[in-house]
Amino acid sequence: MNRIITACIYLLSLLPFWLLYLLADLIYLVLYYIVRYRKGVVRQNLANAFPEKTAEERHKIERKFYRFLADLVVECLKMPTMSLDEVAKHIKLTNPEEILQYIKSGRSVIGVTGHYANWEFAIYGVSLMAIDPFLVIYKPLSNKPFEEIYNKIRGRFGAILVPMKQTLRKIVEYRKFPHISIFVTDQTPGKHDNSHYIQFLNQETLVFLGSEKIARITDSPVVYCHIDRVKRGHYSCTFTTLSSNPTETAEFEITHLHSKFLENIIRQKPELWLWSHRRWKHSPSK
Image (cartoon, helix red, strand yellow):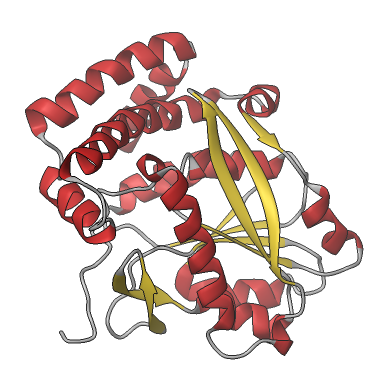
């Protein structure tokens, strides 16, 4: 079955972008009007996050989100056959020197980002800097065959995929080699995971503490990777240092910093965040 799925994805990836975006227009109609994919989740998330907006304003964000989600699907389908030259055309690193200054000085970097814009393209984009090793920390999927296929695509240009629970061990393994580890920090933890509640998008939100804890243990600078959509199929990635000396920060400070940074980005272009994600499954009262 894996071979069949991989073959289908590969054949689709051979299609040019313009044809894939025609497919995306069709996917949007199916997701939004026919399947109504997680529409209740999206509407509730938007209502809770933006109570100050009118129903019509939230409805406009909703429609834009589903259009972007369809584009995201076909862009990810394109990834198996993209060359690094193609990657460079579709995602621009605006200031790679922000990361490279730490690597050149012998320090590893904790990169943090969210499920915003095309975070999958960003993995390929960071690969353009040729930092070796390059770790991508991920939350394992329940569908293991799909996870295996997905990770092979993500790791085409040398990224090492590391399950969350193996993060510290893998970073210790590479401690003698200046490297970057990317964390997608807006994952939903379990109630008993290493987590903490913060105020995020107008709600009490459970967040992982892994990126902060590892940054403080290793004294690795924490850099936010802001992926933005410039136009259809084209993105930029801007790096911003949130903490250059994590050992000097207070407990939870780094977590609040990167969460607030993401929230500000979401408020600027809310349609680019993953609203279909069941982000608020837990609350302090439950």
